Length: 175
Image 1: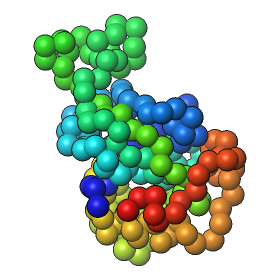
Image 2 (image 1 turned 180 degrees about the vertical axis):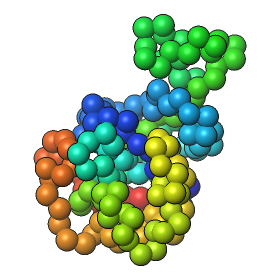
Image 3 (image 1 turned 120 degrees about the vertical axis):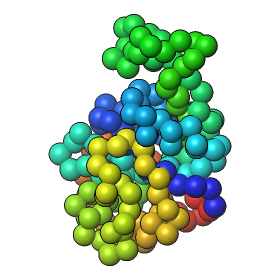
């Protein structure tokens, strides 16, 4: 199984539903060195957890897959972008982004509070290193999360986006 990463949708301005409506999307705008290094390490077909943040109830809402390995983040070169970096050059880019594609929506949102309360996730990196937009997720933690999300059905309103018609989690989609 490919390595698994948790990726944080910085705002719900780009939701899991938005990702589902495009072929693939560059994960641009990450401006943290540690998170950047995780992005560079991602390989094609790695699995990622999509996390809605900056919303009333942050949490993991879906799964995506790396479609292309990291390439220079174009937003670093655009002076009109909030992610512009005047120290970056085309010869020596500082920021990188892989492209990801939608796999599925979880059966329900796994809130940060629920993650913290779930046995077996105590040492999950996401819970130790807050506010980092990209963190590694062990295979053990990934499968524990999949068990938990199969539990009681959630309210689609909890997903913070339109979910009608989106493919839902099935184990065969990620193996």
